[in-house]
Amino acid sequence: MRKLTGMTGHLFIFGYGYVAAALTGRLRAKGWRVSASARRPDKAGALTAGGIEAHIFGPRGLTDVASVFADVTHVLATAAPDADGDPILKAHARDLETAAPALRWIGYLSTTGVYGDAGGGWVDEGSALAPVHERGQRRVAAEIAWADLGEMTGAAACIFRLPGIYGPGRSAFDQLRAGTAKRLVKTGQVFSRIHVDDIAQALEAALALTGGTVLNLADDEPAPPQDVVTEAARLLGIDPPPEEPFESAKARLSPMALEFYSANRRIANARMKAELGLTLLHPTYREGLRAILAAEAGNA
Image (cartoon, rainbow, N blue to C red):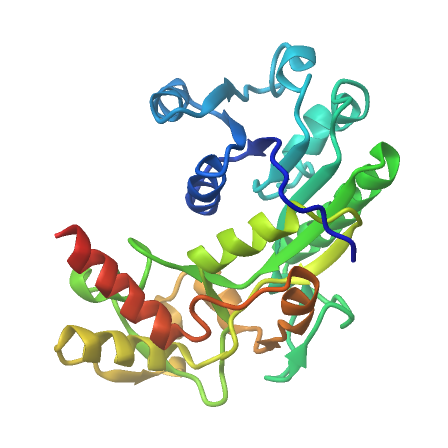
């Protein structure tokens, strides 16, 4: 996979959230121009105040797309599809073909939910897609549509499949402090995860790819979720919540939580490392949790 080096450009982000913020911090320090969509005026105002060009994404998408996309070189889509399909493609697939003459790269943040249940086994980018739930089925359709757009525009279309995301403000520490952490034990159950900083460095590296690809973005150690809570409690110097069998807790879990526990898989990351030349900042949740605490101490 060929990569460009020493480049900058204009990245437009559809759906500016946690991951986008981490990526933007890296890119702006290196001279990138970043603009983004926002659904609410207050969110647009906050982005603008932070030095990011913001454009309102209304019921029919963006307005004045010829101006917005005129010199955009890279597009990153983070929004999830709904029952009507991918909202970005629905509003702007044609515009990205005709009104973005400089476009050379498309990124789409998908989910490892597209693999479905592997009975605890390893899955990689060549594994069959067998989503268990409708949300995953929608993601598969969106992946195909974004790859097709890459073919139509000639831009390198990169699909990123993400597992659980954690980082500052979104970790087991926050759950423990809020009193919402649980240690549910389902025999043999593991989840993969990745620190937001590793997603950001992977996306930054991928911006230089000149050909399309599909990459799992995950750390090196899938682990039972209760182990992460136990380690976070140890680092805080507090007792972890008691373990509870999954079966006894099922009736109290949200539909989304039940959906997560219905699929058991380990996400392989060898292609990510090979194609991006990446060394993980946080190879496991242990390093990731320690880094979060260190950052908190530095900001205190």
